[in-house]
Amino acid sequence: MHTLSVETSCDETALCIYSDEKGVVGDVLLSQAKVHFPYGGVVPELSAREHTRNLLPLLDKLLKDTGFDLRNLDFISFTLTPGLILSLVVGVSFAKSLAYHLRKPLVPVHHLEGHIYSVFLQKPVEYPFLALIVSGGHTDLYLVEGFSSYTFLGGTLDDAVGESYDKVAKLMSLGYPGGPIIDQLAGKGKPLYNLPKPMYEEDTLNMSFSGLKTAVKRVVEGEKYSKEDLSASFQSAVVDVLQKKSLLAMDKTGVRRLVVVGGVSANSELRKRFCELSERLGFELHIPPPKLSTDNAQMIAYAGMERFKRGITAPEDINPEPNTPLEVFGRVWSS
Ligand code: KG4
Ligand code: ZN
Image 1: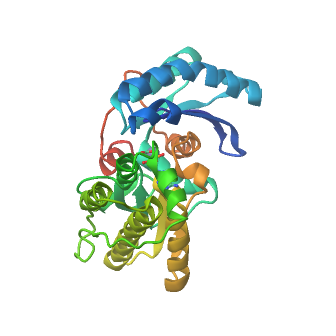
Image 2: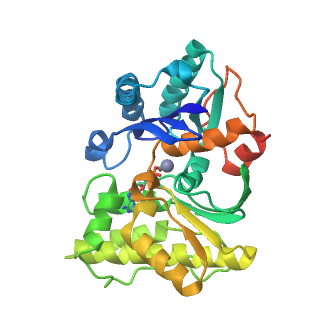
């Protein structure tokens, strides 16, 4: 079976042709990072315009690269929620038009579910497992007991981790997206600044990152500071919190299998320290390769294939939803 997947929830326009037997047949992705760079964050209207401009040329490239005939598709999968609503409208309309023209079914995917299944593209993980999702819009811990069975355990009460990276980079006038830039700078610095870790000691799986960002702001507004050391201090505090809450989730659920996904899971210190921790404490850890940590269409195709195999398709008049929680989506779109 073959699917074409469409991902436009934020600032990456991505398409993938995926086969359940052969894996990824072809994959194209266009990042809008340069468009949003001067603004220090994603500008929703610009993002939607870019998706509209780029989807058809990208499809053209994908078909030329692969020589694939769209008539051989079994269904179209697409990100339904969550995301910037204008950007989702563009991708969902594109998916619906293709499905209508080709007379193929539509299969909706939750963006965070896509992130979770990004690790399965390498090798399926055994259930149950814990998922730490760290992206630009989300920082959540879930218990995953089977496909589409998601239990929310806790998450950030304010900024998402990726959002904090982006805001901290903006404070230091480093550009967008902040994550990779801070990741690089941190590699050249030392965690010499003593920054707060809100809710670190509390017996809850909820987290908070806005106080950390405010502490960085105070340092930046002070006299002189080292961008490298401040980046290293910020990054170290972030990883401390994420590790502490992941271990607490293992204690509370008894599940010692963890996947860490989403854009921030591309972070070099996070990857290194989580690997060290899993070796030291003997829990099972899965992190996707950096290219699949950030937004892509492969992960949407994989999750779409799982849903289609269970006979789950969407009606023709389906509309994008800006922010449906993963656990609700999992219940509504289950077999
Ligand atoms: O998952 P993603 O591509 O998009 C969303 O679903 O939000 O995540 C994007 C976020 C951005 O905030 C970006 O700064 C962050 O992931 N990010 C990183 C790194 N690469 C991307 N954060 C830290 N270190 C990185 N290497
Ligand atoms: Zn994402």
